[in-house]
Picture 1 (spheres, rainbow, N blue to C red):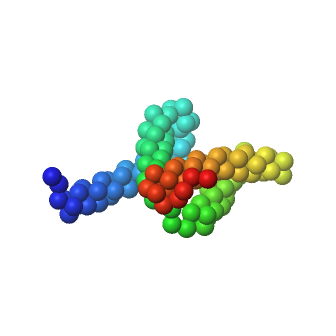
Picture 2 (cartoon, rainbow, N blue to C red):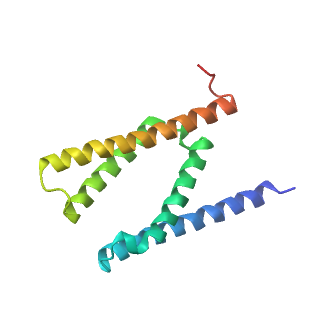
Picture 3 (spheres, rainbow, N blue to C red):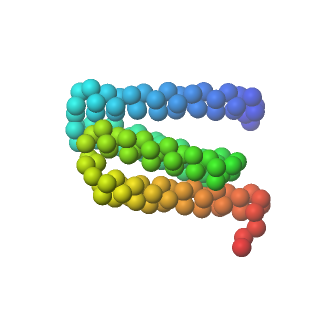
Length: 137
């Protein structure tokens, strides 16, 4: 039987380890992309590992109700940030040449972010029903 303090300490250490991993992977990917000017095909394995670990964290958090507090406000702020950062990066890279490119990218970004929000919302509702916080409709 594990003591709750020990389990809390283990969770705290694991969280810090994941944050360190996450930040270092972002730095590594950006270094390879911007400084070394490598094509993403040359380091797809790093990007795949980063994506899989991030996806696992996202699904685990959504499944356990971590995103339950201020769900709409939290996701609205994240979506605006993601779209602004993506548009800025595409402009810097040189993929946006006209207003048509901007609108196309904006619509695609909204569709992608909308899909992510829908998945998070469904997982969050599933967790609420499982915990008895919300009744099935």
